[in-house]
Image (tube, rainbow, N blue to C red; front, side, top):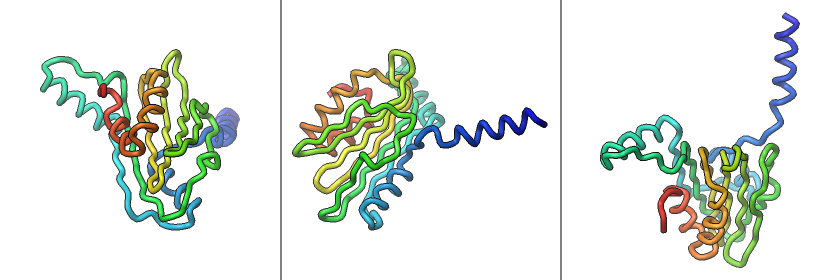
Amino acid sequence: MKNLFILFLILILFAGCYAPFSPERGRLEIEKQIGAKLTDSFEFKLDRTTMKLVKSAASKIADEDVTFFGIERIDLAVYELPAGKRVDFRKIERRGWDTLLDKKSKTVDLMILVRRGGKNLSDMVVMAQGNQKVLYGRLKGKISSNIKDALEKTAEEKGIEGLQKKLVLPFKKD
């Protein structure tokens, strides 16, 4: 019984040691910051189970093992912002995450948070903001740290729409 109590105490202490991310939490944070409900949005999720089905189907079609370069989960959401409203990514809780990139430019604000797994990244959250839209994306799996440069270049050249395409198909070459 004593061990159970200690385990319970440890779980309570560690419960606040990381910041959870999801499209739903992203939407709530954006709504909290802008003080209005988001009306126009796009949300897309491929979790482990769905991703396994997609990999299996793609492997059968290609007649070879398709791994999607180690990506196991994709979450993506794009929200239309009310005129004149902005989101401050720095106010978003990020305990347990490392900041890989936090950049503002004339066309887009971009923040990339990561959790590492050896040489690769194991979990990545991308938040970007253009003039009228804000994007939340998350990739899980074995992700090359070189993706940062590709995402930064895409954000600068193609904006939120380009990032949306890049995150839906992170394994596709341009």
